[in-house]
Structures are given as C-alpha cells and as structure tokens.
Length: 224
Length: 220
Image (tube, rainbow over all chains, first blue to last red; front, side):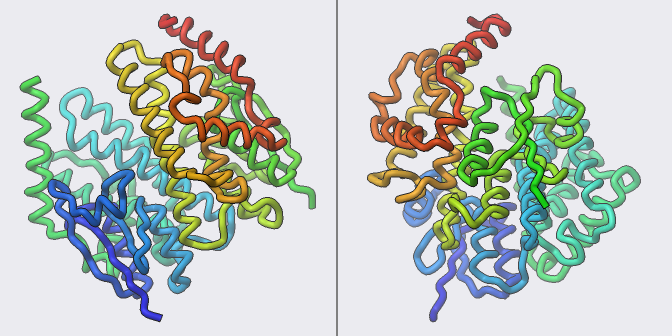
C-alpha cells in the first residue's frame, strides 16, 4: 500500500526537528513542505486551523498537529525502532519528562537568552533547578531512553544544539560541565549520534536568526 | 496482589477531578488524601518534587503526576474496562490533540476571568474563553461525547471544568448556556454518569471557594 507522508515544517523549528528525527530513525520515507510563517500557506491553515503552526504531519491526507502528539502517532503507526517504552509506568514517566521539557526547561532557557539584568539572573537560577532534575534522571543512562535514543531524547534534543547557540550569542555559560556532568555528556552524545548529527539546521543561519531575535527584544524593551 | 492506589488532590481542582473520574470509570478503589496547598504534605513534596502540585497518583508506591498523563496511565493499566482512548492511532492522536488544547488554553484563559485585577485582561479573558468553548462545541458536533458514542479521554479533560462554569459566568458576567448551548447539554449528559457526578465538586461550593480566595487576595 502506498504510504504518503508529508511533514510541514520550517528550516529552524525545534519542534519540527523532533519529527524529522523520528521519521528518519524509523526509516520512514516522507516529503518535506517548508513553510514561511510570515506567509502561511492555505494548506497549513487548512491542516492546522486551531493553532496555525508547524510541525504538521499529514499521513495519507490526514493531518496531525502538536509535535509530542505527532511523535506518539508515529510510534503507534510504525512499530520499528520504538520510541516509547512498553511498560505503562515507564511510558507515563517519559511523557512527564517531555512535558517538563516543554513547560519548564525550554521556557527558562529561552528566558536566559531573551531577558536582561535581574530577569536573566532569575531565569538562570530556574534553569539550574530544572536541569538538576534532568541530571538526576540521567543517572546510569547514556540517553534518557536508556541505551538507545527515545521519546524523551527527541523531546529535549533541540537543547543539545540551542544551548550552545544561546551561550555563544549572549556570552553566558548555561550548562557547566562540572555542575551538570551527565546532562552535558548527554548533549554531546545526542548531538553527535547518527541521524541526529546529520539533521541540525545550519549553525551560522541559526546564529543570525537568534541574534536578530535578541536584538529586536532588546530594542523593544528599551523603547517601551 | 491487590493494587494500592492513593490519590493526592485538592477538592476544587478540576485537574484532580479528572483523575477521580478516570478511577471511577474503571471501578477502582483508592485512598483519597486531601492536600492543603498552602501547607503541602511531606508525602506530596516527596512524590512530586519537580512541580510540588496535585494531583499525584501513587500506584503501588510509585508516583505519577500531571493529570492527563495520569488518566492515560490509568487507561493503559486497566484497559479491560471502559476504554477512554480509542484503539486507532489517528483517533488517539485527535483525542490527545484536543485534550492538549483544553490543557493549553482553558485554565490559563479562565484564570483571567476570575483572578485578574486589570479590566482589559478581564475582558480579553472572557472573549478568549468563549472562543475556546465555541471551538470545542464545534468539535463535539452532533456526537453525544467528544469520544463519539462513548465517554472518552477528551470528555474527561473538559468535563471537570463544568463545575467551574458557574464561577466563570459569575465573574465574567456571561452565560455559557447562551453562548454554547450544545456544550452545556453535553456537560449535563456527562453528569448523568455516576463516575462524573460522584467526582465533580458542587458548583456553588466552587464559587464560595473562589470568592474566599479573591477576598484573601484583596480583589473581591
């Protein structure tokens, strides 16, 4: 049976990257549709009318939105290279850590990047607290998924690239190898893993993009 | 071996109520422990050190946090009775999408109606809240439940907000029934189920609770 799999994404979206990784890890053939979020295509608006965002996976004409929802769909539809564990408790833990990543970790790291002064200091403290929980979770494991990359690794994976980009732009250390040795190793191991290492967006383009976002944020906060 | 199930929750929490509904759907016996969120128990802090929030389900000594993650866990372990998620992966994805929508939108927007001191936040909150409910009502369509013919995952995620509707309406000065009659009909249909009616708090008690918190915050 012909499978038609399309991924609507942008070149830099960390959420879309999760889906690229999952599809490639499972060896699923797919077509990429790049979107310009300042000029969203009619198809994007049709496939994700609720949030109007990427990524969107379209499988045999049927759309799925929200990256963690898409990851579960992919895992349930294509059984090779399982991303989530089989045990219900372990699955609940995996979902918990992925949600923690989205709700807390990404948010605090973004604040470290985009804020200044006292707000930035507070964000750094929050980030350290959050990353300590992940450090604890890494004990005795190479990846969050164990020996192999799994759902939590894909959910948190963008950090393995973004953190160093943010550190370079703002000149601040966010992940100190001495304070967070296991998380630091995980970032290295993940970033250099097969498939993952071949799919990072171009670093120079990322630096330009995020520098521009930071400049705009500083400009708007000083003019207000 | 008998399952030991403990639920740490707070009686007004629509998130805690979701877990009660799921446990009731599965006919499970459990110990309920009420938490005072201004004086959290050592057990709560130990079982949910990351967020220090309720609800927390403790199954044979192992804790699970985040209400819809708990509901999905319950559905997965006790899968022989009253399935909450469908079996088809695409339908499961749709159910997870809409439960995620309820989680991302309703609570935070609803907070503006009840707790906001700024008039423009209050008005924006009300407008956005009604838009969310209307979108959900459209998604329900002519089905008896969000799960289709049967009460399901999305129904669990949303129905517990219904006992807070009276409070949103009172502070927002609007009628949900006028704006979304089908949604109110759906909520009434859900309340006919024992699992729902035995798990939801009384709307007037919720209103008194909210009023009490507002007084304490100096905004009543």
